[in-house]
Image (cartoon, rainbow, N blue to C red; front, side, top):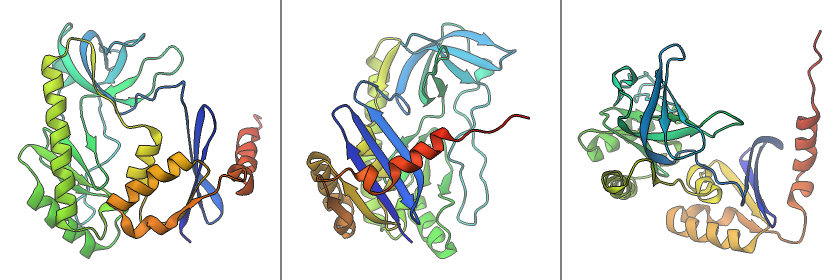
Length: 286
């Protein structure tokens, strides 16, 4: 059974739920008063190196210094067309950094309480079909693409479009898409990457160099695929925005969109009930 995306907008909050086989499997929320900084790229400065914590602290212009661990394992692992893991070479060796040194980092985890944001020097620029990794040479294929013939086809496309010194991860959404579509996106991402380089060169330290898209844009980019059977939205503005996105990027999926602003979607689809059960669950301690 295909997944369903439920999008509900209130005055100050956007809520998105994903159901599979009638069960809530993913939930996202974003308040207008809260600014998401995950995937933002900052030009920062090293303020401390703590070998006991195996981390570097970086001033990126926020209240707390950002936490850069020595072991910068990426969330998206490189896998080749035969599902074999590929080694990742890091651009920066944290042990060679010095206090006061300028450094470009990307946020991988929001600041929490009295802890600063968690960052990495392994910058990545995500599109719908691919993720580009500066200062890398690997080509990786999403592990969610299961068929070897399709993995091989996409690997050949990635090898053709790959630029020297730029790593490429082919995302699940690239499945069944052709060379021209993927190549066009790579060109757009390279334009964005060059813009980031220019911003890094001219901006002071610390500075925001690149800001990630908002939640609805990320959902459109990352989740719309042939695996989605329906997307129900209660906001006409968001409906029109998603409709425009699909008409440009995934015209075959335009039919999955539904506008329903006459009922409480989270109540209608049982999402409020599922969230209440999840939040009220407790584990007895013996």
